[in-house]
Image (tube, rainbow, N blue to C red; front, side, top):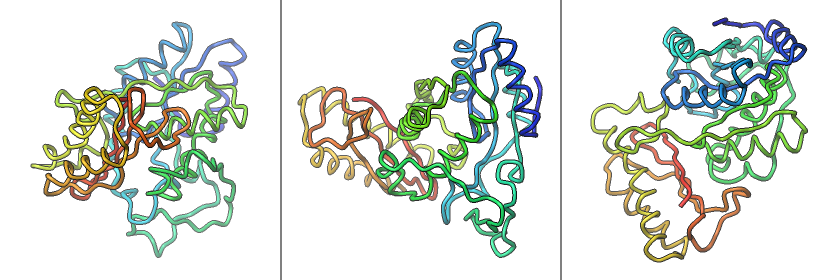
Length: 301
C-alpha cells in the first residue's frame, strides 16, 4: 500500500492508471475509519475489478465545518487508519494537508483555539455550490456544510480521477447531492451508494460514536428506535400524516434525558422533496444531539 500526500503525485498515478486501462475505485473519507468505511472499500474493490486499483482519501475537510462544530476535535488516528486500509487491500491512501487542498489559505491566528475553521482567504476563492437539494435538513441546520462537501469532492475527483466512487447511505442527502453534482457538471464517474452498516443494537456506525461515553451510548439508540417506530407505523397504517408522525417521534426522543432533536423529515428518496403522507417507499432522516454529539441517521420505510 502506498501513502501519498502530494496532489501532483496522486494525479500522476491516476493518469498512469488511465493510460494503462486500470479502473479506479475511490472512497473519500475523513478518517477515523471503522467497519462501515471498510464495507465501502470492499464495494470499491468489486467495482474496480481484480486488475483495478482502490484509493481511499483521508482528509478532515475544514470547509464543511461551521461555527462551533467539532473540526478541531474531530477524531483522528492515521496509524490505525493505515493499518485498516492495508488489511483491506487498499492500493493508495491519499492524505493531503490543508495547504495542498486549499493553497493560499492559512489558519487565522485569532481562531487557533476556535472550532470554526476560519481562514485568511488570500489565495483560494472557488467553491462548488448545489442550490436545490442542499437547502433542507443538513443544509438548513448547517448552512455552509454542503458547499464544503461538494467543493472538496469535486477537487478529489479531479485529483484521483476515479471511474467509480463509493459513498455511504448513512449520509443520504450528501450522496444525493453528489450524484446531482456529477450529473450536472458531467464528471465521468459512477456513484455507488452502499448500505449503512450498524452495530448489533442498531446504532449506525459513525466516527463520532467515539464521543458517546457512559449512558450516552445507550441513549443514542433513540435514533434507531425512531426509525423502527416510523417503520411500524407505515406497516400498520400504510399511510400516516407526516406531521402526526413527526410529533410522535419528537415525544419519543424527549424520553431520553440528554437527547435533543435537530430535525426529522420525510421525503422522496431521489428528489428529497418533503411528503405530506408517509407510506412505503418514503425516506426518513433525522439528526439528534446526544449530549454534545450530533448524530444523523436515515432509512427507507
